[in-house]
Structures are given as structure tokens and as C-alpha cells.
Amino acid sequence: MQKLIGIDLGGTTTKFAFLDMDGNILSQWRIPTDVSDEGSHIVPNISKSIVDRMAKEDFTVEDFAGIGMGTPPGSVDNDAGEVNEAFNLNWRTIQPVREQIQQELGLPFVIENDANSAALGEFWKGAGSEADNVVFVTLGTGVGGGVIADGHLIHGVNGGGGEIGHITVKPNGFLCTCGKRGCLERYASATGGVVNVALDMANQFHGNSQLKDQIDNGQSISSKTVFFLADHGDILANQVVNEVCKYLGLALSHVGNTLNPENIIIGGGVSNAGNTLLQLTTKYFQDNAFPAVRDSTKIKLAQLGNDAGVIGAASLALQFKNSMNV
Ligand code: ZN
Image 1: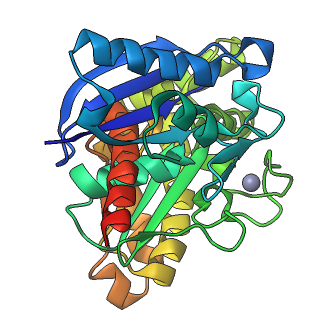
Image 2: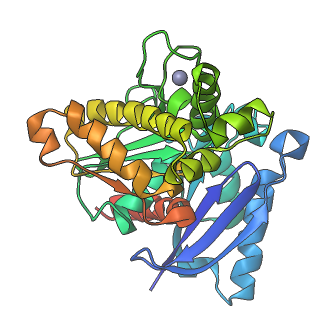
């Protein structure tokens, strides 16, 4: 039986996995991402690492059906297999990733942005429960999104489909890196969102709060600190968490009202806050969801953690193989 290769390319680490055709991970490994020299070593290092690993495990290229890869934010041209302007890889010009990897390995290669790739992973093997309509939102450095409607990943006319992080939740709110104001990302990502909201609310807070003391003393705080203190009864921290979940629940209600998916799955580092985040977000989602949506769309936490990327990437390779066989 043939196998799949999934790659999750990140700004600091590149993760790899060999998987069977059912999406089970057979083995996995990682290498540091070398972004020096305008990122020119990244793709050759990926090819070399796969070749070395195949030799180590006594596999040949014929044992594999294809390769899928998730890549950090930038502009991904799925049809051409190219990536442009992925700044945390130091890629400022168009990179013909598919051409380079296919030249080295001779295997079919499919590329997708990392949020879409993680969405496919959860859709296939995680919290998506094999439903045909699933939305994935990842709360990390930024807020990413992936929309699977009737079993298909949505790209939109210019690749902007599923950009849940840039749904406006507060008109004239905080300025976002995308240039507009009030994006969800400025309220629900880790540092740029949760910490940003905490610093802002601490300014106007008068009362007893460990979070307020830490901020006033110039200690650096993280989204993890905020959720931890909220769970331990800190008043300001709870107000911050409430604000974050209010905007997240509101954004997800818009997504729900538009798509009525079976599941909206929350992943990424901030989702480690678990039930505190899930319950409050679900409350605000339900407050703002249309009744038919409220009764059927469920908010869930992601299940695959860091493996979502490689599993979703492998599913891209599988989909490609299946589309060639039709
Ligand atoms: Zn934005």
C-alpha cells in the first residue's frame, strides 16, 4: 500500500510525517527552517530531508503517492504551486516550490496555506467528525481560518476566502496589520489580540487585580497568563476573557449565519485555554446566531494539536491522487 508525505512548513521549524492512506501517522520528524539567504535553502533542505528519511526507513519514491505541504501566511497560488511574499520565510519573490520539489523527488506535490491545511487535518481526522461542512479558526500569532463547504475547501476568487481573522467585530476598533480597523485578529490572537485587549482594559480598571499589578509593574504578560488568572478569579482577567470571547463568538456567529456548518472548530495556541474559552464563546455565538444555526452548528475545540498541519497536508496529496484517478 502506498503512503503519503505531509509537510508543515513554519517560520522556525519544518515538520514532516509519513502517513498511511487513512491519515494515520507512521513516523514523523522535524528540521529547523533555515530562512537565511532570502529563504533559498528552505526547499532544497526539505527535499534532502525527505530523501534521507526514505533511505533511513528503507523506502523508495515508489512507496509514496504524493506530497502535500502547508505554508505560512503569504500568497499561495495553488494552481501554479507557487508562494509569494511569505515574509517570515524571507520569501519576497515568487518561489516555484512545486517545480523544485517535483524535480528532486518526482512525486505529485500540492501546496496550501497553513490554516487551510490545518482545517483539512481536523476535517479528516480530528474534531470535524467527517462532516461535509466544517469551519476551522486558529488563534495563534494571528487568527487564521479555513472553510470547508460541501466537502470543498473555499479559496474565493482571489484566495481571500475563509479569512476569518479579518472579519470586522468592532467598527473603528484597533488597527490591524492588514490596514483596516476592528479585525477579529486584534481581539482574539495571542499577543496582538488577548494581550492587546488586556493592556487596553488595564488602563481603565480601578480595583484589585493581579493582572493589573503585573501590567503596571511592567511585567510582560501572555494570553496564557490572562486565561490562567481568569480561572483563578482575577476580576480584570475575567473581564478581558469576556471581551475576547464576546468578539470571537460574534465573528463565529457571522460565519455560522452565512454557512451553517456542522462544526466550527477552534484551534491554535489560545485554544489551550480550553473550556473557559469554549463555554463563553459558545454563549456569545448562540446569542448572535440565527435560530436554525444556533440549534445545529456546534463550536468545538480542535483535537489534533500540532499534528493538524501534517495530516491536513497529507490529505491534500490524497485528494490530488483521487482527482487524477477519476
Ligand atoms: Zn485585519
